[in-house]
Length: 351
Image (cartoon, rainbow, N blue to C red; front, side):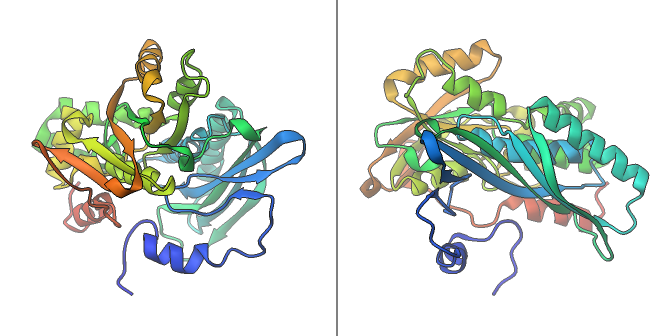
């Protein structure tokens, strides 16, 4: 098998994981699936438990505070797709043997702070120091929430005719992390102002407020049908995954995809396409067509940019990208170009 960076690809996931998921309990309403952010388990009294897991970040080039932010908020973003905030958290930390107790204390204090800020109670986990652990991944975490079953959204719920909305802009996280990881190169090639604006995007990488604001719009009651967090594969990958998870097709208008000048400049420097790059902080939302304007306005009132970029279609229509007046099949990239760009820059000695 060819080595790949990033998440497992769709065929491997389908053939190995989805077909081998332990005991088939009937109370599992939503299990592992391509493009699905959370699992959902039925509870008594019309309630359900939603759960999501993600790697924990420990990235020296960013710092302890920023790594803790990513660790908490990337999981919170996944949970936000249900329309609810996370409530409980478990953390498994496999830390480098060289990681000092003082640094661990600092890192954990930020984990605690960011969890407290979004209402997450940390309920347990595991912490250890591992020889030979030199990865930027420090283990894994799980967030859980409990909510009325009928109100929990998943990416499987999108329906033909729904409008596709995208909050904020493409490539927020990849742009900011690349700039923060290679500051001298970005400053020299693009200038101090572009570098600073790219770094400032880092704390826009939470989409929890986006999701909760969207479902809380006066016109959105029962009108938001699905949400999907933008991670690996970028905005285009997220739309592809959502359409696939819901068993539908889609049409996306390339000229409506929100790409800022800063993202365009930084991604161009690293020779990557911002539409396909890790984009935590942006949320893909599908809603009934008649509710789209009101949801966009409600988000704008909270300072969150949002625009319509396409529509969910019947499966038979395929997933199409309209560019320069021509429709083509949307290409799904199994490997996010961000990873190769990061490690290529590192190997080439970019500072």
